[in-house]
Length: 132
Figure 1 (spheres, rainbow, N blue to C red):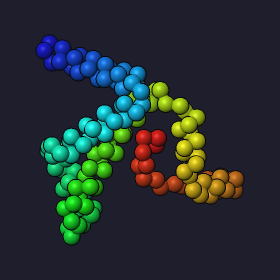
Figure 2 (spheres, helix red, strand yellow):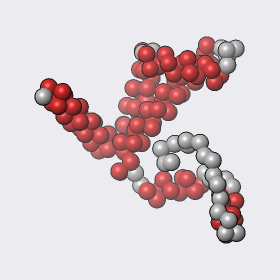
Figure 3 (cartoon, one colour):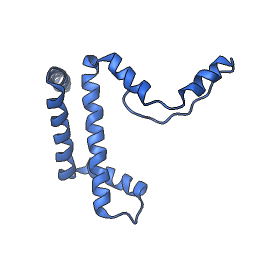
Figure 4 (cartoon, one colour):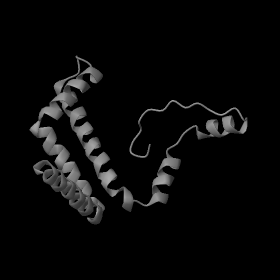
């Protein structure tokens, strides 16, 4: 019973937060999420520490600590943006999102040409953002 009440409280908290983020002006939400990311960077809790370990493998053992600090901060800001966009998705201008994807796509003609030849196309894609 207690767990069910706690789960319900968490659900209501997320719903309230989701509603506030969607109804606030975008720049206010963006600044808030960026500030939360910056606090997480400075706080350097267990999640940020694990991120730092993972990113150390990416930047290499010889990278300066200052460079790693920046990569961690940028990663946490990117993650915050991911959540901001997730919360604001129902309110986003779908045409503007589609246009931004079209404007930033290179080589799409290769897919169209493969499909026109009737052979289909196989695409290997990384995770590129919230839109995928």
